[in-house]
Image 1 (cartoon, helix red, strand yellow):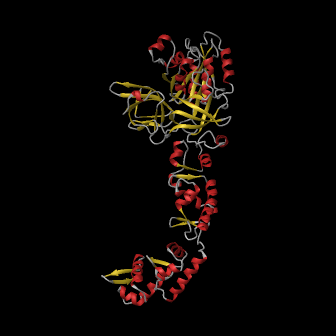
Image 2: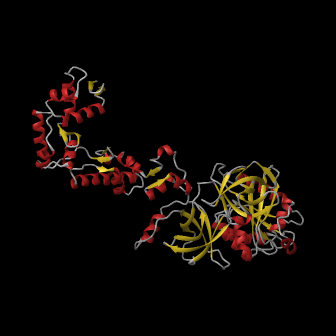
Image 3: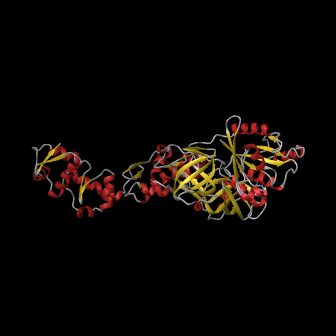
Length: 586
């Protein structure tokens, strides 16, 4: 199946043409059929000679119903643009063309109707002139008469060709169904309809009514009147929902894949034709939705839109910007950033515009990382960016390689600065390093440390270090005095008062241990750097097992030292307990 919307001025025969092609009545309301005037969206379908089904969304042509028209063409990838031979190009023809150009619709057929009433050449020439310079400039043209049937076979052939040219949607894409109708059926409950532009909906699926909205369950599916277990885009689909009332799903609502979309109320956009023509307030049309928005121009091409009702938007979404109450559509726009930064400082708008000028109009991972520095996989997916597998991320975060290289130099300076300021506590705690680089997660330090500029750094004990840090001369001298004493009596630990007299407090002693000058065994017990190996060597000389008292005598030490020493040896697996008092060197 493929879906085509009609477009064109009121009373140019759009509904009549759809009726002639399908044998179905697209006008759903009695008033429409009585007045011969399409007011709301209509739907019909037919099977072409090649077996492919084409579904039509028939839109109203009267200027009073432009919002309804825009709701119909918003999600549809192709158009059948209708111009009457006896009327020619008219005002709503131009407005509908503006809307299609804003959406960048480039697939379609130009149909000159009522060719039985007047030779169609003049109307065709007018239409070709109007289409020139738009994405629809080169679409094929067919002259028809719905009354006599002339040209309908050729139109069917062109429709078949159109169907073969349309890009194939991704059946695995995240579902975003824009609702264009909702109603209640007795015994079934709430039913909504829409054009599914990408993805697949299955019976039993759980969907969100708008991003992060209430969950609803797909109770049943139909497409063109036939029950389906699943419907794959592009398709017209009717979804029977469990868990919501029809009044709670008006036109403009969305059904989206859970957890895959974000409700967006501020976006930065690139405006077709520039921002000069934009009023301060516009109506933003996306899919079947129409919401008010405030425009803040950033430069001649870029603007920030603050939207009154959040919508699920992604990079590359095409918007129609319409002045409220006016006949014209001033511009179209493309979403460049659905999560823009705040603009607070003087000149921020100008700098932001300069950055946006480099942003492509389709989602690209490289571009997003280059301008953001870092991004989380969940955010990238919500913005429509294809991200690499989770295994290539750092706890879900990705970082731009050039940004990581720049941060490496900053990290080296931060570590060196910390060591200069506090030589007794060398190495920057990883959390402090994260804050210094303004990273959202300390896991990203791994990517920064992998850069050549950070080759001198390493992580150990929850710190980023630059190797051995130089102790202050006063501390080193005091430690050497302690070490000299311990060379003579390795297990005669100085008292706390003796250490204090040398100026060795807790921070100094800890720094000496990190520098490999002393070994701490417990509160107030400090021995030489090789004391553990020496203790094992000497204790092995004793008959096994030995008692703490025997060890104290053999080591020429005290209970204050021997008890924490034996605990340290046991904790390292160098000795084991045997009986109540016994110790054995392993």
